[in-house]
Image 1 (cartoon, rainbow, N blue to C red):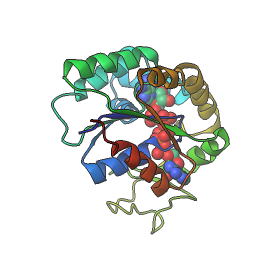
Image 2: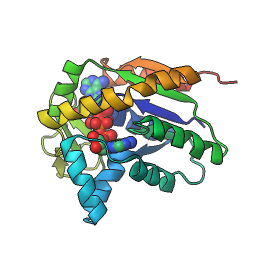
Image 3: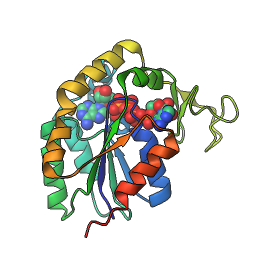
Image 4: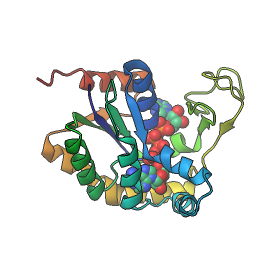
Length: 218
Ligand code: AP5
């Protein structure tokens, strides 16, 4: 069992790689972005506040996201947990360390996905996802085999995210560099950091991630 964090800017490919790991290694994906989008669709007051913050491309409060992770982080997962989009601030990283310690578990690797900012714009503006099963596509790099139909589940509910526009992306990148990128140094100092070239093809990136996961950890 291996617990990992996928760390990288918006559009780096965290969700794409997490879904492959779930399929191939029976790991459990914990995406705070997906949890927050679920909260939005619940229509509660909290959901409405979260929707406003996310559409501006800002980070939701540490208190809310730590609470969401705490709720999901129960019991054992056969293949381990993939933290996708969490932690994003130093207080979130500290909280995750405490939660794992309380469960008698450890973090095995933090995988930093490196992608140029210019490539991120193309990734984000071309992205669409299946509203039914969550499969992630791209107009150019990963189109559906049949236009308008999800390859995985056959649904026609293909969606674009409200925050996938140039203005939100600028703010999301700013948040990443100001609040999340310090985690690279934090995990380097803890000895948990590994980097992959996120600009490669999806399967090539997956190969690099697999090599990290398969390292002998004693
Ligand atoms: P979140 O949903 O986590 O979004 P994000 O971090 O901005 O990341 P994305 O989902 O945009 O990108 P990704 O890296 O998963 O890339 P993907 O695989 O889709 O967060 C959204 C918002 O929620 C935040 O802005 C914030 O408001 C809030 N939030 C979430 N977590 C929070 C937290 N912990 N604290 C506070 N607030 C939080 O790939 C992108 C595209 O590229 C796809 O089209 C894909 O097909 C394509 N692609 C992927 N890999 C490749 C490749 N190797 N080659 C070519 N194309 C590729």
